[in-house]
Each structure stands twice: as C-alpha cells, then as structure tokens.
Image (cartoon, rainbow, N blue to C red; front, side):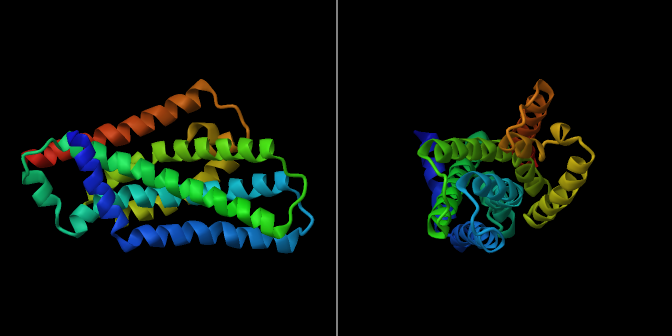
Length: 236
C-alpha cells in the first residue's frame, strides 16, 4: 500500500502541473499538422500508407516527448528545490524512484494512446479509404509496442536528469539523439543503436537478439543507475 501512496503523490504532481496539458496539446498538434500535410500532398491516400508514413514519422518525435516526461518528473525536484526534502524524509528511496518511473510509464501510455486517437480521427476527417478494423488495431498495437520500447530507452534521460540536477541537459541530449539517430540509420546500423531500434520495429523489421539485448541493457542501466544515484545522494 505504501507504493500506492507514492504513486498517488507523484501522479498529482504531474496532473496539477501546466506541463501535463502542454504535453497533451503538443501530442495533439503534431499528428494534426502531419495529417494535414499528408492530405495536401496526397489527397487520395489510403489508410495503410497514411498510418505507415505518419506513425513512422511520429516515432522519432516520441523519442523527444518521452525523454522530456522522464527527465521532467525527476528534474523538477532539483529545479523546484524539493530534492532535499525528499532525501531527508525517512522513506524508501527505491519506492520514490519506482513510483516516479511508474507515473512516467502511465503518462507516456496516455500520451501515446491519445496521439493515436488523434491520428485516427484525422484519418476519418480526411476521408481515407481502404481502412478495416483489423488494419487499425494492428497498427495501434504495433505503435503501442514501439512506444513501450522508446519508454525503455528513455530511462537514460531520467538518469541524466539526476546526474545533471535538472532537465535542460536531458532535453538537449534528446535532440542530439535524434540527429545521431539519422546518421546511424543512414549508416545501416539502426539495429545496434538503442534509440533507432524502435523505428525498425514499427517498420515491421524483425528485431534480432542483439537489438533486444541492447534495449534491455539500456533500460536496466537507466533504471538501476537512477536508483543508485538516489541512494548515493541520500548518503551525502
């Protein structure tokens, strides 16, 4: 029950912040703008190419979005100067970190689901043809799994937020990752770079053992590193 109280507290911090609604607006604006571009450039496009192209483009944007949610939840404790209060309280630092990651996960799932809903509604308004519920659901599931993979690598942003004691450095890191990802993809090494592996999955490219292992190691490093950092900070 203690972990639930931590989750409730962290969730309230997010919901009461203007950042939550800014993220919702941003995640609605991106697919709307991209959908309009699709309609203008190819008015007779069908559901399959529409979803493939749009969701593939959005995947790159999710890297920045999910990196921001991860670094903001942790980084705000430093910018708001509430980190010392958390560290001196006689509570489990593991529970604090775990609750933050759970809230980040729930927030990201909500944003990803909302974004797909906007993409779907835009498709209806545009008047796309050739759509079936099977096609929509398959793309939705693929998109959500891809989002989950991006959440895994975003734990590094959470770790960086703690190390840098804020969220500006992780945000800059996220933009740098997007640039590097393009270079990595052009070099044909996307299967070996954590932040480009999700884009392979949404493109229906089978992930090999190496790619899965890289994702797992990256996610575990970010999580364990963050837990260790909080325990180290607690001792200082």
